[in-house]
Length: 32
Image (cartoon, rainbow, N blue to C red):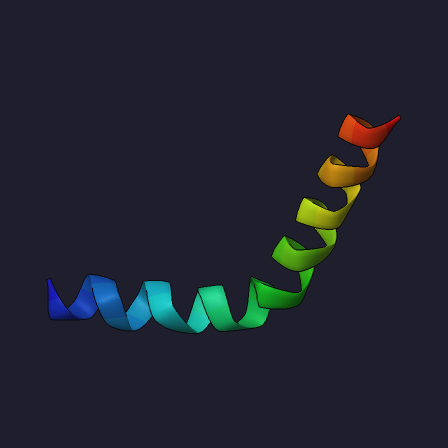
């Protein structure tokens, strides 16, 4: 389990910016 968490957390940190952008695009699609 610890190994999985160590692999997932760094990936979330690296992809954090992309996730925020993706959420923003989804919100724009909902508004339009």
